[in-house]
Length: 273
Image (cartoon, rainbow, N blue to C red; front, side, top):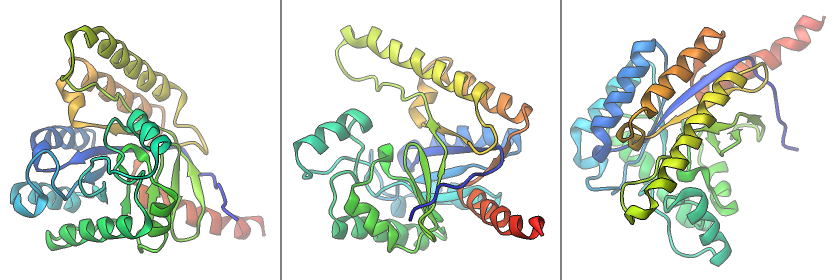
């Protein structure tokens, strides 16, 4: 039976969509995390997305290696970060709404998901990088993709509301919040709608940083490259991180969070004696 286990007050900051095409934005977010003196999780897209692949981009690979050497964690974030055909109309529509064209693993069968996971890990390994876990684009993974993850040998995967421990089937309730900024394309008449969505994102991050983290419920902040293209979004995020740290949150990574949870669970029976 799947277990949902508690943790102490914690903050996990993840930098999404780290790829050759987002090198400048990824470097900016990393500098902000380093300025706070905290470790984050870098979600790498090794395949063809918005241009070059990681295998053909030594500068991006070096950025990831240097970050890992400073204590940041590397996680695989899909292969192409783009939605795939199949899965039926309901699944395609729901994925388009939830992930806006990024739900790569939402419609895959087990073999296709396993292939993309293995290819991504191989490219990262060739670059001298060890992916500890997996964060599906849009946090969407089909049942078959989850089966592929269970057999992958990775430490964890994350959905929108949980961190899933692949070593024992348990999960931690840990909601992820982000701005979800709208891309600039589209009719100009939609500008007000985009602005409204971004204001809602700002309010969500601000509110979450006030309510979370708290004992047993970590706070996950998801930073995207496109956040940096909108005035004020970076400032809202930095204030949220500062507030959480000031309130006693411990910044950590997914694998360290799970390892600490395991130590706490093991220590409880001894303490009871």
